Length: 368
Image 1 (cartoon, one colour):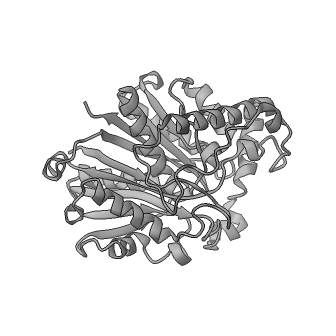
Image 2: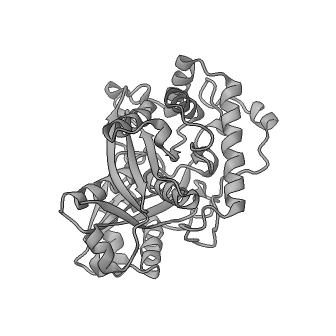
């Protein structure tokens, strides 16, 4: 049984700062705003089997199974189950992959999946888990890991800066062109991704100091953000009952592991493996949404798999628009489906690398 994407909704990404546009909004409220938006777009919540949320820091305001809490807070039927999952930065994408797998297995018919993260309100490492506190796990600073990859691959500072400029320019152009409007749900008066800097120049990027002792700077690293994203998944029969058209089909997903020191290589491995599983070549893919976990990782996957400017992060990425950890995967998948729809492409892949050497890729096919 195929899992279809029927609706995608996401908040803007606010700066992860006390002055950020979403800093005053609790993560529970971010999710509820999107649950309400799905209802406004035609979803009958009584038809939903499960809500699955990804979240990387599940403590405090993001603790106690935020998915089930959001179902109750949004006044959805108590019959709708809720589950929160954590695979660090890929959590939101893993939630979508899990929801699609449940539908393919016949264990569910309608699933709302995605993620949320308020880095302003629940800062990184707040959960204090052993991965962060015990040296034996070797999970160091992600920026240092990215610098190691840059050194291993022989990338120059100029190449990294050029990528940082590209993503800012593409993000600014995409917002001006309204390419994010289809899935966007304004929250607290914020109507756009707050990190985008249209005035970024090559000269300004070249002047930035190193952030981690190597080649990456603030301009070639993902900006921390607050936000949420949700994807409505359903079986063909359930979609028909809901009266909602399929926008894309989730063909499958792969999660890969890698060296926890150079921890950010696993998203690329997951992309290569999911394409291989479905006998596709990189040239068959029309849209790639790859979380910009530092510029070096983007340069490496483009070089190794041959993704061109015409398919790879064509509307900018997380360096320009922000990384809201658990929400990022769902936000990127929404962008992938929206872009496939816009250009009439067939295949799209979304991938995220995360801490401790894990990464996930999801392959979708636009519905005819």
